[in-house]
Image 1 (cartoon, one colour):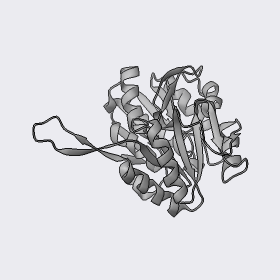
Image 2 (cartoon, helix red, strand yellow):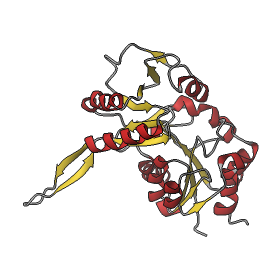
Image 3 (tube, helix red, strand yellow):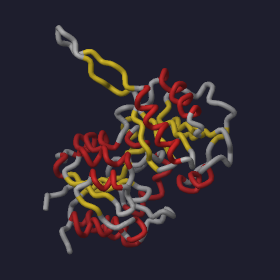
Image 4 (cartoon, helix red, strand yellow):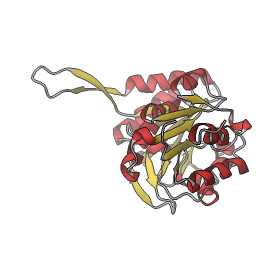
Amino acid sequence: MTTIRLLLADVDGTLVTHEKVLTERAKAAVSRLREAGIAFAITSGRPPRGMQMLIEPLSLTTPIAAFNGGLFVRPDLSVIEQRVLQHEVVEPVIAIIRAHRLNVWIYRGIDWFVPERHGPHVDREEWTVKFSPTVVPDFTGKMDDVAKIVGVSDDLEAVARCEEAVRREFASAVHSQQSNPLREQASQVSAARSQPYYLDVTHPDANKGAVVLALTKMLGIPVEQIATIGDMPNDTTMFAKSGVSIAMGQSSEEVKGAATYVTASSEEEGFAEAVDRYIFGKD
């Protein structure tokens, strides 16, 4: 077994169940990590306030990566650093999302803006993050310092197509500094599904792979001694950067194929099982 000094976990569908329950077994698993001197951190597409309810039960002391790494905060929610979308990409991203008939949400600072008070998934998201959105007729005057744009729809194929469209549109050409310049692609945004019905669009360095690299610097732990665990396509970026990666049992074959190991589902205490089996090496 690789020596693990940090476990970085996704939240929804990984650390908590489908009904957003942090089970006693999950809390006990994190406690065992702490007792063994293994650090524990969380990352999510949620805003910081949406993870506040986990801080005390898990006795978190590490930086918390909200908005998929767009904003790092301390356990008291004070800001360490943030990465926001460039102003000029916000309106075009919104246009692509709407062209695919997805609803649009914007997260900006501590605020969450929606066009409909009870639009698709708004009520469930409010229950999850434990604060209410601000309803606005449009996003005029709110396109600066945007941490995350979310496209929302229960047409899951449309969400997947929209993801690809955003990625295609915002891959911009960059010249190398050689005398005979070669062109390579550098994305202006990060676009990935945090749930089958959510497309998260963030700063290009606001992805979970970048979270691993940031925590390496912040905590002084080499990437090969970091384990990651998650369940969705946006978790595969952190799988690629960590020494050990674990996919939840309900993950797609794409996500499972990107991981070192596969544990049980979130409804079957897969997080706690992964800690026992793949961090502590217990049968």
